[in-house]
Length: 358
Image (tube, rainbow, N blue to C red):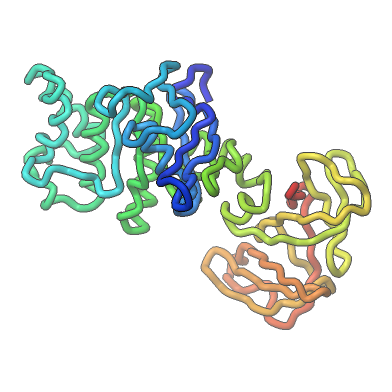
């Protein structure tokens, strides 16, 4: 995050309804978003991420707390007076207008001179790789092109902050993957702060400078994609971000920067931890399937093998009947390393597992 703050939420609470019907959509949320940062609000449906975005935009008012843009409180400013623009999931293009007219709309509302508006429209079309398509209508565009027009329209006014409410969810997988790169490139070219809302963990990990993982109206963890994936602070974050095994274990003792643990069947793990638990404590290890190395041994039995192209996933049954999922990159000839019924050993590189604190 840069030293300058673009957006700040201070102890923001939002309650919808009253009495027994009251719903606390946001619960004392505080966070800061830097200038020129690609910041993502990530979480399942109903976690409060879109509510926070709408508070920043001015479409909702907080029940308590404050929203600041560039260090100034904006809770009493209507949406059109805030230095932000929003791109919605539906794109919300004007169907009776051409692409160029859609992009020019906000500039014309501000009274920008015609020549300057024409130049800005041309620049925006070039920026989103749609030069020469200004005369088309939205009905003549693909989903990806409509999204580019919505982005161009939002960026034409050079907002301080661009808010994006799940803008990729309506696209098919291939197009969605391609647009991730384009969105990140757009953010870097324009230098505008992007605040992106999604429930898709892969989108968050691949595009963001930082991610706020939300649940039940609270920020569970805020950090870089690497922090969130490799060092989840609790079970919810570990479970929501990627695939994770949760393995009960007993602490054996400290081992330098790591904690030595023993799990079912005598599996030895040197785990990382935010704070080191006492010897003999019972802990839960978060263990990613791709961190596990399978060898010949007797820690568990292969109960299922699924070939998925680049990898093969294995389901294992351990000595205490608990289950473990493992992902192994396939050999050059594509053959699986193990088959159902094989006994296997389990090795975890130092730091490959994380001790959860909850």
